Amino acid sequence: MLFVSCLFFVYFQLWVPVYCDTEQLGFFSGSKSPGQVAKETGSSSCGCDALKRDAGVDVGEELSPHLEDPAEKYSKAANEENVEHHGEQDIRSKMVLLKSSWFFMGTDNPGIPPDGEGPQRRVWVDSFYIEQHEVTNRQFQHFVNQTLYVTEAERFGDSFVFEELLTEELKSKILQAVAAAPWWLPVKGANWRHPEGPGSTISDRLDHPVLHVSWNDAQAYCKWAQRRLPTEAEWEYACRAGLQDRLYPWGNKLLPKGQHYANLWQGDFPTTNTADDGYIGTSPVMSFPANSFGLYDMVGNAWEWTADWWNVHHTPEDKHNPTGPATGTDRVKKGGSYMCHKSYCYRYRCAARSQNTPDSSASNLGFRCVVNPS
Image 1 (cartoon, rainbow, N blue to C red):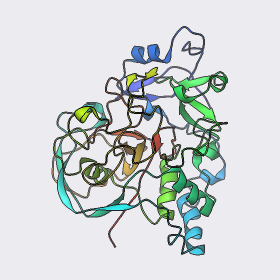
Image 2: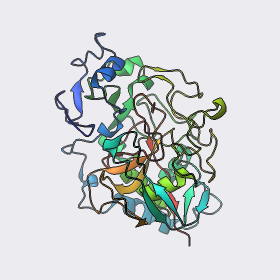
Image 3: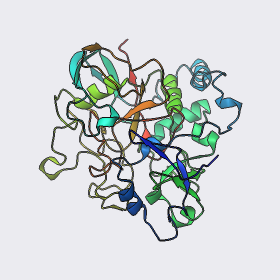
Image 4: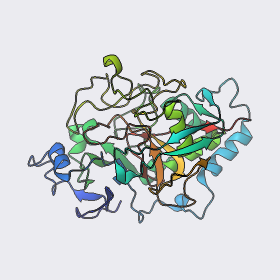
């Protein structure tokens, strides 16, 4: 992978280019901790939106946009050769039917205005089914076993991992970090099978959300599963669960009656996670209460890809089944992750949003699927 200097440009809290030498940050020299650098950058972001692939990386012909869509390539043959694979061996997530309705999308009181959280507007969505929880390692493993699909992180040879999850030995071998978010490190060998790089495994995390999955990878899984990614409007409708003008899927209080309703960061980001909710990293799906639609982990745990291209300009007019702009460079992700904290990345709200390039992957990024009623 091609690495560039530590200089970066800030525009609407997006950082490019993304890499710098860790020595320039004093990352391993003891002069500055990630927490100190975090405070100095003064950003309200965990840096997830800065995790973009270098456009010049050569990963071979298989990723060429001029060739067959890899989702089609891997899913078509598998579905044709094993039409019964959704029968007795069906391990896809159970789905919940959400009936068509108007709802208020976005907010007039944005927590992070440059993200395009507002204005609030009335949106109609047709009925759709949505998976109860994020796609798990077990489910993604079944998909890979059926199709022999190779994720983009595996083909690139690395992926981004949150620094606090890595061993000291592995960190000592990494010489680059994300400039505006030095707690993100590009780790060779990190992928969905090895979430923290070589030596890590998912054997004890099969019921956790699959991570290090790019938008393109999520598309491949959805097509195999004969489902699709939700639009941003569908995702937010599902998150709000019939509530209006509420921050979270359950209301406005982060800890109703002192109870944790989502896997989030507690403590001082990014150096100290007290794990008051019981988890340092991801948690098994369905570990926290469902919203009133019966959906789990709509915020926290892992970011979730949506189908839409990223755009920060919205109009207040009523919309029917909006799908975002026709083209773009980044895709929308929703819900935040176990790394989110109000003091630094207040994106675990239904109206909150962020973005990444479709080939990006990280140790807090997953997805769930939807399907239209037959």
